[in-house]
Length: 248
Image 1 (cartoon, rainbow, N blue to C red):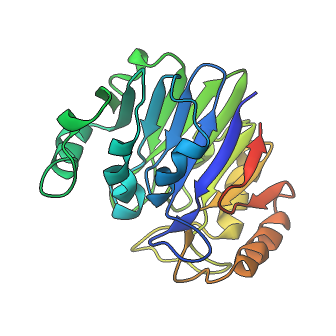
Image 2 (cartoon, rainbow, N blue to C red):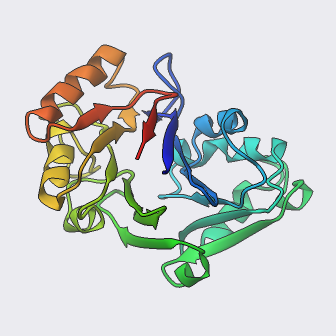
C-alpha cells in the first residue's frame, strides 16, 4: 500500500506554513518524488535510499525545482531517475552545475534523465503524462503502482487533461494556489471549487489539495477554509500541510 508524504505544500516561497512543493510516494518497490521545492531537503527523514528513486518534475518554475541544489547531500544507492518534459536533461544541466550548485558529476550517486512521454516505457511502473493548463508547459502524471492509482496535477487551471489523468484515481493530488472565487486566465491555477470539480467529474476517490500560494494563503486556517469550500462539491477532500501522511 503506497504512503504519500507531503514534504512541502507551499507555492512560490517558503513561509511558516510550509516549504515549497515536494511530495513523496513511498511504494513497495521504489521511491517516487513529485517536484523538488525546498521540501526535498527533508527527504532523508522519510526515504529508504536503498530503493530505486524517481523524481518527476511538473515544470521548471523555481518553486518546483529550487530544492535540487540540496540533493547532492543524499546517496541514492540505486541511482536517481529525473523525469519530465522533453529537453529536461539540457535544462537541468544548466541548473545542476557551477556557478549555481554542485555539478551532477560530483554527486555520490548516478543520475539519469527520462523524457516523457517518449521514454516512459523505460520506467518499471505504469505512468501516463499529459500537458496541463499553465503559463509554461506543465505535465500532470498518473501513476499505477501497488494496485493503486495516484494522480498528480501540479500548476494548472481547470482542463480536460486534468480530468482524464484523474479518472477513477484512488488519490488525486491537485494544486490549489487560489482561494475560492479567484481566477486568472493569464496565469492559470485552481481554486477549491475547480479542484473539487476535477475530482468529482473524474470519479476520483479522494482529493488532496496542495501548492497553496504563499502570498494568498497566509495561515493554516486559510487552507482549512479551502478544504471546507471544496468539500461542498467533493466531500472527501483534505487540505495538505507539511508532514501530512496519507495511506492510499
